[in-house]
Length: 356
Ligand code: MRU
Image 1 (cartoon, rainbow, N blue to C red):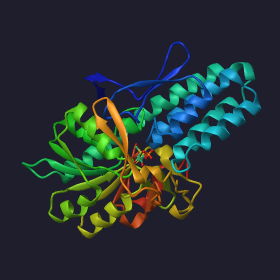
Image 2 (image 1 turned 60 degrees about the horizontal axis):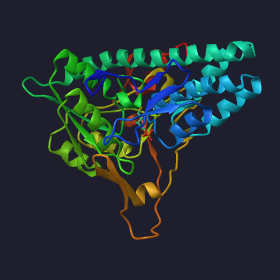
Image 3 (image 1 turned 180 degrees about the vertical axis):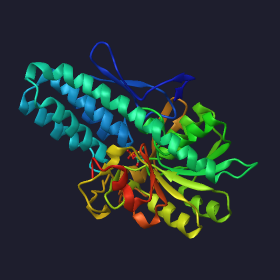
Image 4 (image 1 turned 90 degrees about the vertical axis):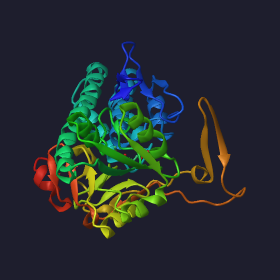
């Protein structure tokens, strides 16, 4: 998708053997690239959220493995890099998936072959992410075309960051939005701000503007009212992990949107590429929920253009809790949109007989 009018991916290998990422802690204020040169750089970028969103976290982890292989391509080095990366964030399963895929490709090779092979495999993981998201975009577009009413834009509500910035390109929940734009289907996007880190207010809002799509940011708490007033046609979110039974882990607040959708008879879809499905767990109770620093709740970052400040919102010393994800039970999900098609949550395995 576009940044400054130019087709752009969120992560790119450089000819000097380093990797560049968009530093998403600075958006929407500044589009700035950040160089990753070492395994430690990749781990830091994931844990402090310079990169965010399950598929992009996976792609960054793949390059983290490739950077590590330049320094220590022994079996112990492979193991150490995987352990360090997997420890950065617990919920998005794409991280573990990418690390295990890199290890399974590299382990049978000699140490001398690993650095070059790792670079190739990381690039392949990135290209596959783009292809998967482009395919799921088309399946989502068909749904959107069915839901659209003549003479009015389709009003899509989303939560958190599931646009192209959360992936290598295209996005997950916003991929059908971009496909709809390309197909000439008029639409409007409600992007909920997504406290406490405000991914919705900063990232989808930025990329929808760059892409020229009509949208408005809302406070998270406004979603129910808008649904009740009939101002929403469909809700679509991404996910950090989907269990075998279709339970969905996504950014905190997703569950409340699913409940409100259910109460208002609105379709609630989850868009995921295959690597976001965790076939090893039966249901959402097994998904680890990341607890992040309380300071993300008590303080907020913002500013005017380039000058950013953190300010305190709560009384000094106030305690806060910060669970970063929640679980939406499969019964509240109308369908899961994947690169292989759309299914009701309980039938995911029908689409992936090779993986389930
Ligand atoms: O904590 P984050 O910003 O990495 O969380 C991101 C989300 O929860 C996204 O909704 C999710 O990864 C969707 S996948 C494109």
